[in-house]
Structure formats: structure tokens, C-alpha cells
Image (cartoon, rainbow, N blue to C red; front, side, top):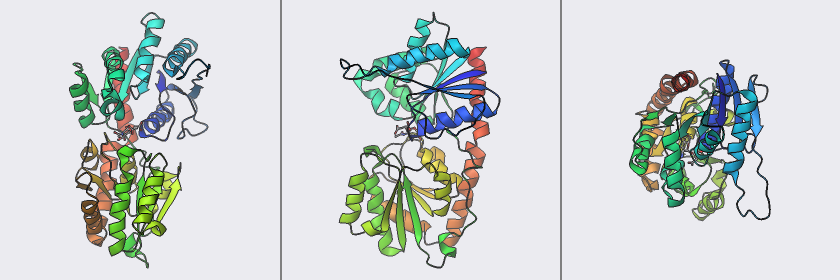
Amino acid sequence: MRIGIVCYPTVGGSGVIATEMAMALATRGHEVHLLSYDKPSRLRRGVSRLTFHEVAVSAYPLFRYPPYALALATRMLEVQEEAGVDLFHVHYAIPHAVSACLARSMCGGDLKFVTTLHGTDITVVGGDPSYLRPTRYALEQSDAVTAVSQFLADETRKMFGVEDNVEVVHNFIDTKRFMPSKGQAWHQREDQERVIVHASNFRPVKRVADVVRAFSKIQRQLPARLLLIGDGPDREHALAVANDLGCGHRVEHAGMRDDLNEILPSTDLFLSASETESFGLSILEAMSCGIPCVSTDVGGVAEVLGDTGSLVSLGKPDEMARAAIDVLTNPDAYDRMATSTRQRSIDLFSTDSVVCRYEEIYRRVLS
Ligand code: GMT
């Protein structure tokens, strides 16, 4: 098939999944066209049959907000005409699905598109009255709509009243790139220092300060350090909280990294304190590396973790700390958790099985 994929290029999960999908589909023999306003950070060089198309938006002084949705619709149309794309797969509804509708209208109705919902496009942004109606319209016009968790599919039905089926297709992970290390776990190392990790875009919804608060309790009882990966608006606040709590010297901010698959295996526990998380891709990345996770029990996280991690209440860093200390003081339970978390990522979330499901959806849409 000739497939156009539209995504945000940033280090957010939707851009990561879309880019990994583009590469996986090209590797499986499809011709893939990836459209975004910048080269996605996860895009690796030298993947044959994969072409990146930049969407350029002109910054005319009259425009307070450059009309990206229009520029994207135009680029989609151009790519369809030049490359004979069979269908587009847009990741994150706003505004990508609306641009797809416009591109379809501009070419006389002959453009198929599948929309994948990722999270805040429904749970936060989609509820904004200024986005709700065009987003609902675009979902109704989509040839297929998928959501990355059952939680998100249910939310979509509730918030948007979309009658048609919203199919659940979970996110996936390359379990051969994200692998456990052959190094030693904390209980086998001489210093026994536990390396705790958190990776996110540091948006308020991630509540990174709660991760720091939980860590502050943990490090009072165990030798530990916290590695914060990623960047965003709450970075300064999180680091200030660490200093206020007197554990700043044990917190390292590693910034944006594209070598997570190399960093995660050398850590011992992943913490996530999000307020909402439709899936939690970074949790899955840690799981695939055999790193146990403690997360708030929100959104679709339980679907990802199953019984291989610990779920705690939102906004209760003390509870998070207790769960983490339990895991990090019992070597046998820790090893069991590390094995089962890795196995779950292989059994349920491997790239091939999930990409196959998308191929079936494409075939159905095209038939
Ligand atoms: O909504 C965001 O925070 C960004 C969004 C994205 O574009 O990365 O993240 C969402 O999609 C990810 C990939 O499907 C999920 O793993 C995240 O859980 C989801 N974020 C939220 O629901 C907050």
C-alpha cells in the first residue's frame, strides 16, 4: 500500500508511535509518506521506501496564529497527487483529522483517512468548546477511528457522542531495541544504590513534582538517586521542589534524550505520577526493558501495566513512595516483577502484532 502518515514531530508519545509505525510499515514493504512540520525526533536515517514531507507554514504578519491546518491540508493533497497515496493515517485528531476532511473535500471526496486518538486530543483539548465541534465532525468523517486504549475509546464515546465504532489498538514497542541490560540490578550491586527514573514532556498533567516528592521519601530510607529525562514547562518547578525538600543533590536532569533504549535498562524503577494518561508510552518503554513501574492509577495505565506493576492513588506521593520502597527492598519480588513486566510487553505490545492490526484496518477501509 501507499500510506500517508501525519503526526506531530515532538518527543510526545503520539509522534513517537506514528514515526515508529511509518518505519515499521516501510520495513514491511509499504511505500510510506510521513508529513509533519518538522522531522520527527524518532525518525532514523536510511529507511527505504519512507519519505518525509515537511509542512511549511508561512508567517505573514497579519496572521497572529499561522493557519497550520490549511497548510497541512494542502500538503496532504499534494502528496496524494504526486505519490498516489491510497490512504492517510492521522495521529492526534486536532487539527490533523480536520485537515484530512478539508483535503478530501478539495479533491472531490476521493481521499480515505484513518484517525488515531492518543489522549489529550480527547481528554483535555477535545473538550474545549472551540475545538469540540470540528473534531467531532472530523471523527464522523473518518473511514476508521482508533484509540490507544479502552479507556480513551470510552471517553471518546462519552465526550463526543460518536456513534460509530472506536476500535482499540494499543500502542506498541520494539522489544528488540528496548531490552533489559545484562548488567546487575540494585540488589546485586555493591553500593545497592537504586536508580529511579521518570521520563516525560514535563507538562502539568505529568505532575513531575509528585515524582520528586515521592523520591524525597524514598531516598530517606534507601540509597537512591532520581534521573529525570525530558523537558517542558514544569522542569524548573520540579527541580525547585527537589531543592526545597533537601534532595536536589540526588536528582539529575538529563534533558531531552533520544537514546532512552540505552538509558532505561540501567535504571531500577520507573515512576509516573500523571493526572491522566490514556496509555503511558514511556511506561511501556520501561516495561520492555524489564524495569518495574509504580504509577498513578489513571486512564489506560492499568491496561498497560496489568498486574506487573504497582498502581497508586493520584496526588498521594507518600503512597507512591511506600509502593516503591516495597519493590526496592524485596529482591525476589523485584526480579519476578522485572521478568513479568518484560514478558507482558512482548506478549501484548510487540510492534509486529500491532502494525498487523493497522494493516487490516487499512485493507478494510480500502476494500
Ligand atoms: O496528550 C499528550 O500528553 C501528548 C500525547 C502525545 O502526543 O504524545 O500523549 C498521549 O499519547 C501517548 C501516545 O499514544 C500516550 O502514551 C499518552 O498517555 C497520551 N497522554 C495523555 O493521555 C496525557
